[in-house]
Image 1: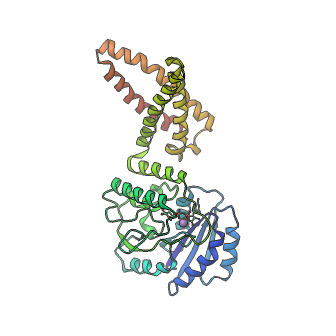
Image 2: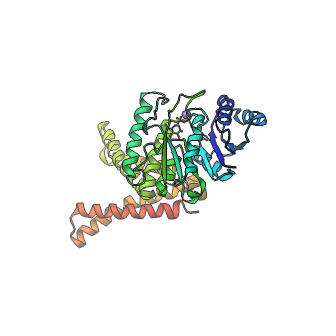
Image 3: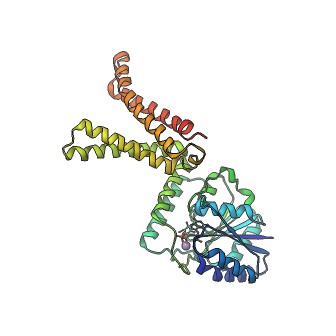
Length: 354
Ligand code: GDD
Ligand code: MN
């Protein structure tokens, strides 16, 4: 087998027949297979089986019981199952024209590359298929942000967020990847320095159905970017910082409604502790929580820790000011830094411990 074509699918039944027909026609002369990695709740698997029976090239179906890692997880599962080391990844909805496959493959076998990227933003490429103005704006803004955060690795990449690329499986180390959500190529490129080539393409309109991109995917993307760049700790700090702002905002609102400032401070602090817990479950420790104790036990530990920390911090500030004669603002700052480090350690080593 020369080429494995990996197609992640989530409810794409109406696109499958056209996709398989156009891919099969396009790869004539190349020994290729299609691997559909499916998480659907519709009849996509049945349609794949039917089409596979008469398809000119092998079509394999992997139907996953759990949607682990979403689109990115599906791509990794496809690479693992692939018969060829040359793995081409493309969407099922025909926004990625199958007729481009031979050009990507030719560039790949020319050599000296680990990945050939089909780019909407390279000279001659277009992004016309992006559904609306908001998507266009979000796409170019996030591309710029991403490139700014990885200036070296992504220097020569015009479209790090594309879902259309051909990669040598041997250049990917799955153990270093945390595939989640849509930006699997970015994850791969950011982890390791690869030899890259680009081929421009025209991003088409969807053949049928609707995009699975969402606001939630956008949040996932921001979390992924921060985690990739600065690791869990800074993501934790980012959430802590947002929490501090929320804390003050809640307090201000309560005081406007005539609530006494002490009661307001307590309510705001508790609300922030709970909010932070929800965010850190979702974005910081999402990959560790399954191995830890149940959610209520995690919450109890986190809640108890944060309250204890808040209570202890006040006398510690007093102690620093009284015994070491440090200014109160500096003392408070010192306790915040130490508290942050201890809190992070406590959460990764206790709350989310296996
Ligand atoms: N297995 C699996 N699991 N497949 C999924 C999942 C999932 O959770 N979510 C989406 N897919 C599949 C879709 O069925 C489709 O084949 C492909 O992944 C892309 O999803 P779309 O819903 O069509 O995404 P898009 O068109 O908005 O985004 C595409 O373009 C972006 C660039 O603008 C994707 O290629 C993105 O990766 C790309 O960044
Ligand atoms: Mn699409």
